Amino acid sequence: MDIIVCIKRVPETAEADIVLDAGKKGIDTDGMVFSINEWDNYAVEAAIQLKEAQGGKITVVSAGPEENNEVLRRALAMGADDAIRLTDPAFEGSDAIAMARILAAAIKDIPHDLILTGVQADDDGFGGTGVALAEMLGLPYAALVTDIQLDGDTLTVHRELEGGLEEVTAVKMPALLTIQTGINEPRYVSIMGIRKVAKKEIAEKSAGDLSLSGDDIGVKGSLSQIEGLFFPPVGEGAEIIEGTMDEKAETLVKILKERGGIA
Image (cartoon, rainbow, N blue to C red; front, side, top):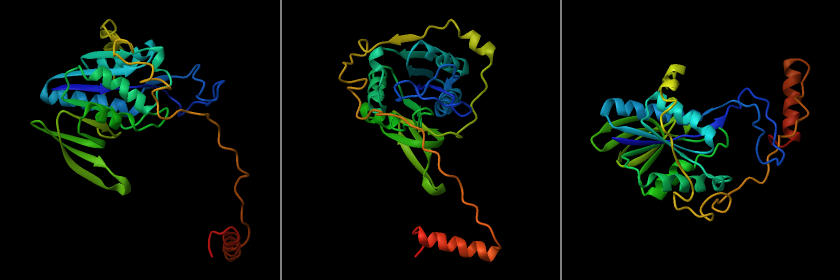
């Protein structure tokens, strides 16, 4: 089985003090720690488990500067076989659709039975790249996948739906799945494991190599772009209602009526 996994390098923002950059269209990442996108990490593990069960080859693909080699080598240390980095200044500013176009151009000529992506990205929250990629490659797909079972060339997948519901559906390969967190337990990658793949070649491809023009990628090739970022204004804080329980209830009902909460 030939599996391709698309991964992204993102800043870790959970514990960081966020500062906007000078253009106020992104965050200042100076001094921030970067790592593989959480959803993509689960996708890599899912691919490795399928390879261990069925045999085959895993190729990981990431778009970005040389620093992206860090997450590509991490995936190689986990068990991927080959890595490709898509790099070109012209890719800058690509939205989910333009990025899917870049990935499709790179993937279309690589043998694949299955393509895995994360459901969304930690940094921008976009969740459209995977499904857009499936459309561009003409592949059947399933999103928000929480379990995968393989029977011949057919995948039985469990999909997370709203309200705690789950859908079970069959998808015939070649296909694309977007992987939800919690589908597995991604394996630990040791420093020794990363050292073992430190000299493994990572192929590089530019816009020219992929036959992509400036109208296909970057801001020109995007259907959306960020106009600006801002922090939500700080409110006045909570209003503390004093008194007995009956007095508090009476005051609360009065406030709700005055503000249109109840008739």
